[in-house]
Image (cartoon, rainbow, N blue to C red; front, side, top):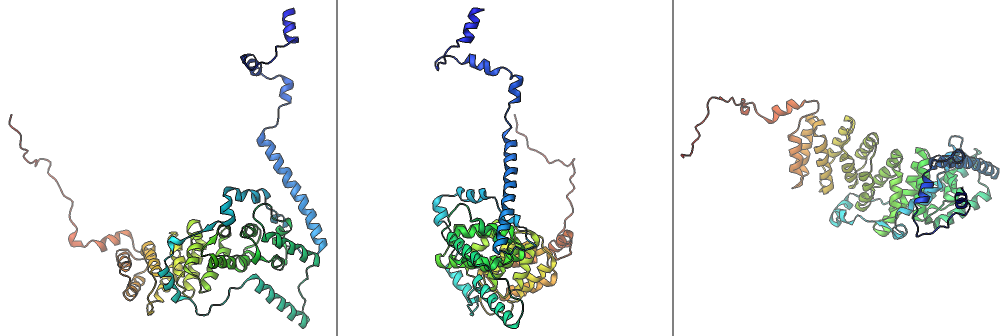
Length: 448
């Protein structure tokens, strides 16, 4: 007994050169009752607790910020929920970590391999001669100020005026955004989507001077927190002019601005009305712009309903040359289109029946894509009209393919059996071969 007590009282010192079998046996023993009571909370449960605590803390901070903002004169809209204006700041910090510093600072998206100089010159013949400057947010604010002055002179109720402290605050935010590369966005800027006068406050930050990375973060915040009508205006008057200006100056698009376009597709209706259609309506969309913006449409999924509406609107627009490129991209998504959209596309192509200009290759390619995908959904009359069209507008390589697709397909409403009767004449139909199993030919055998 004395030896055992001495061992317990005077344990042997730890040596790294001795075997750890003793310590292993001690660890392998089942835990005692008091040790079970002191077990730590699992990491999954603790992370949920921390997330809930963080959400509650943000809500408390949001209420305090809202009260302070209202005391300083900021007007919040009754429709928009200010809670939606606070995004997870960890995503702001982590987004640009997936890319190298050179890609973030000076990364460009280049599509030189898809752009042919001869095609670009040919498409310029379809541009509008009236090269009007694109409307920007500054133009919209100036128009509003003029309307406000007219209302004041006529005795009507004028728009509320922002406090000087708010004006100074957001001008300072604009200076920060002009130098922004990565990290947290100023908290005051995240409140803009929930303001009633959000356009006026946004104008104070001077969006034309933002860095490309700041434009991405703004697009990300606004696409998530603004309604479709409001975010459409942001796309049309802030994002689109900036993208076009960057392409015009650099002959390519900055990486962060390309990501901004990609994030803008989060609301496809606003993307169509704020970027795609205004770009085509300007009648000055270059092939380079069409290829870059079109790559967003090509690489990402768009709901079929929004694609149908976009095709319908593009078919009704005044032709710009690059419009055919967007039509081709949407057709190649192979969505089931309503008959109204198909009829509008047929009418769009038939506009050029009497056109004396040589149509660009992309026009013929878009017609070929339309014939390949929807040949069985066209009426007999539509196919006859398209046949006369390609007789006048011919391309030595594409036109034969269009005719082959149109003339070897069934019409709208026909069944697949009707197509077989068209392709195979009755005289050439043969009966199945009946073999006689007893009629076996002689097989020569080798002699031994």
